[in-house]
Image 1 (tube, rainbow, N blue to C red):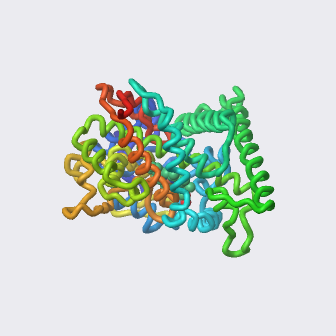
Image 2 (tube, rainbow, N blue to C red; image 1 turned 45 degrees about the vertical axis):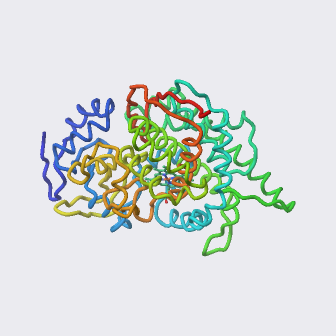
Image 3 (cartoon, rainbow, N blue to C red; image 1 turned 60 degrees about the vertical axis):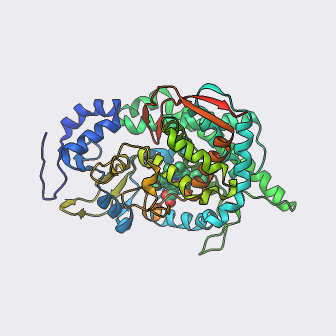
Length: 447
Ligand code: HEM
């Protein structure tokens, strides 16, 4: 273990060779690998990678707040993940920085305000009900089922039209392939030359182009329908009607397609992950399951997003299994936090999973206890050490939408189905998001 001190004061950590030796262990089990290092180094540590000589991982909430919120103008999304993802998914707001990002965020933000999102509630509830009406029961792996459900919901919310099953299949299949490729590429950048030779890059780009072509077709039909006097209530309509503050013009079509790709990307797997983990947690915590079932039986579906207990149960799931388990930023100038000083170009990796399970902060950190998110009057408690949707100006734009969608799902699911555990504990699969490997449950329809 080396402590390479420089003129800067970078957290202790690994030198290049040690990082290389450890990268195998990282690839095998990234979360436990990082957690062990956090314990060893006290909450922040550094690693040297060939392409990123200064690399700091931290689960220190104050440090994370500094980077994401207090001094956010000095930090950009790093090329580590965004660069490659943008190559295939385009320059939507998730992957861009600076003025370009601000312009897009300002344009889309009003459409995601809670009141505006309420306009989509009926669409979301309907999509969930339709899906659950035909959902298989018995001994099932809930993850692929909930993935498809969340995919249907985001597509219906983006496009208030019926897409053929073939189109849905193509969108979802292509999307998964792009995501898997980007993840492999981010984790194993040394394999890049092979991707070019084997044609994997070209194949992935083709998948992306197919999705863009479908989106372009939808936009053309939409323009024609609007010209014929039809009206729509979906996220595409919101994005098409919005105009830039400075020019008063709407988004160019290419950018519109990028934003649709980003919303589709950011808006379904995250939700599917949280709901899958949650059903598992409920299956092994019968007292919470009972409370929550009683709660949804007594609550009208559209009031669910305001129900404190329901939200606490979702929040507690995202504490234990944050869908965004990690993110990344690059320092634009020399900077520092606390005792640390680091140079321009340093990559900071907020490790939300570690922050959310820090035993020094959370009593019984590994226990599923929704009540910790409620005060003695049953009102929501907020925590500075809790980042399910990130922090600062780049906080998840879809957070209200996601919370409402998950509440609607729980209302429908717990009113119509029962679940029993099977003794199988889902393995964590930390890709771009924190997926459960399999969520095997005994599911039955209520009589
Ligand atoms: C449980 C579900 C969700 C979770 C846990 C989640 C989490 C996050 C997090 C942590 C970020 C910030 C990443 C960073 O700072 O690097 C983020 C950004 C974003 N999310 Fe979500 N998200 C969820 C659902 C959604 C949904 C449903 C949508 C859209 C309908 C969405 C759209 C976005 C977009 C566009 C960004 C980029 C915002 C920006 O950079 O300005 N997310 N999300």
